[in-house]
Length: 363
Image 1 (cartoon, rainbow, N blue to C red):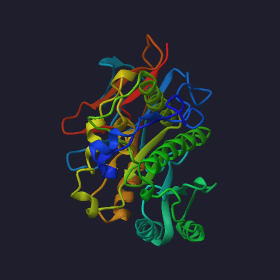
Image 2: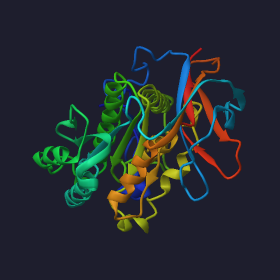
Image 3: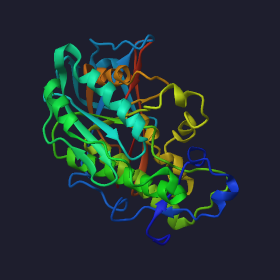
């Protein structure tokens, strides 16, 4: 594939490449048939309303319920916005919040996937196998893409039986394939996240996608030089994924299964350097497409440094128990794919609000 058809960057410290080794490789852009960044993925992409699912917590991290519309202030690019509708959820939403547990078998070693499976068994069998929210199990493989169960269920025992029917497959795209294997994993990961969002956009309600993975390889470093086409390809991918997640009403979570093994590495929090939203192609870096970055920007969390995957999944699922849904108009945009930074605050001191912090608007 040539530079006109791919826009992929990889995480240098993740792969352990030296700067000189990296410099020998060109940076290229994701295939347009895999990440159609120059088109909107859904028919209602030009809708004028924003739906924000907001989790409010106190200083200890405990969810705060009982707030009203007057407690919230929303700003779009610094300008106050009127809240058109408001709903407080404390318990079971209608329709119920859908939980999607996605086991990443592409970016995780076989031994770690086996440990994940044991931890998820513990999650599914909590409360005697009676789950508080509908759950779908999914498996991300490099041979079948995302295999997602067609139906959600609150029956943990039935989900576990289906779980046991799935045979974890050894990756054909291995880390030993080096730089180009990482490129393929990166492209495949983005593609499958986008396809999942497009499918879930057809279904009503809020979804929590808990992606159990150390993250996909994304390389950013001082020796990267991008052409304008490569910059535009990456920017288009960022816009496409951000809008696809928003339109599907997906909150994304990243749970690192490497636990304490990963805690001492420089790779762990490297993604934080790329959390600032990208307004233009000339400012793009590969790190802006990190799984953890996409999760944080969607209003979710990036959890790591713990071997208790069950507890971390429960932390994510807790966001479905108490939240607020705000609807507002999109602010006017002067140009295509204009970045809008969202800021949602609660008037009560000591409370913080977590929700989607950006969208890309159209004129």
